[in-house]
Amino acid sequence: MDTMKPAGVDAAVERLETMVSRLMERCASLHEENRLLHEQLRQLRTDRAVAKERTEQARHRVEGMIARLRTMEHPE
Image (tube, rainbow, N blue to C red):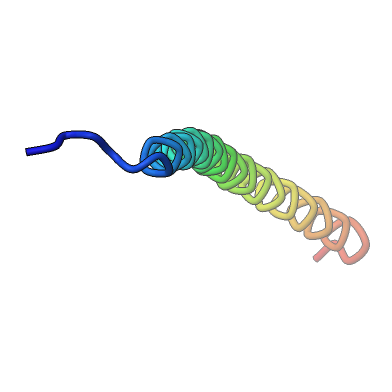
């Protein structure tokens, strides 16, 4: 039984190994990018919630000031 490989097989296997290696590197890179994007999205959601809360607090303060001004205009 002859265990010799045709000449092109080694080169084809090498190319395939290179392609698989590049694919694995790309997958790792995309995984890290995805993780970073999820973290960024989480932070943006947190920032949005804080901004929304501050806006609500400011709105309530302004409404309170307007109500006090109205009572000063029309004392009963």
